[in-house]
Length: 190
Image 1 (tube, rainbow, N blue to C red):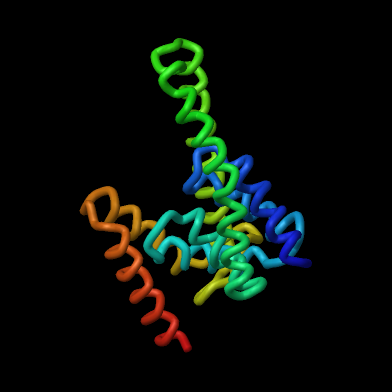
Image 2: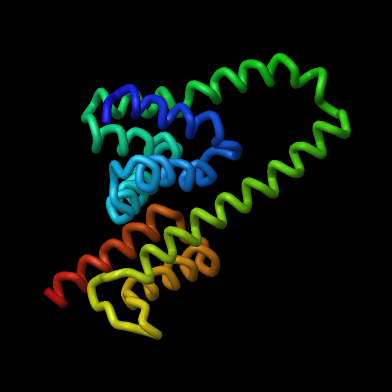
């Protein structure tokens, strides 16, 4: 593993990250966990969690934290720049063409298709993270049909959904409440 490999991996992520944000999460995972094996799935899930807690776009935070985990500050800078370089180039080109394309039916059709793909990418990333969190060894794991289930993670997932959807709580509030509850449970079980 070298800084060049890190740059190329995140350049690839940046090239194919249509939709940005949460749509980039599975692309980063494929590169750093599955393709190169630089991180375990659990390490990546931890980095993703920290990326969500940190101000700024989750994709850039994730790239920065992965780079930092692998190569310190140099890795953080390289992974971040590599992930945004393709977007900067594409946005500059599209900005030039936008006035010509705006209002054309083919442009509207392409955007509709990309929106659907983006929702699919976000759903896939969410489902993957849900499975890795709930169906995993945790604080008080038990088996259901041969699968390890972490009931604390499942309950915190339900609590987070409730707070976000029914109580309109902010994401920082939800993260702090769920983190405090999980920390207290961990201390109580320990």
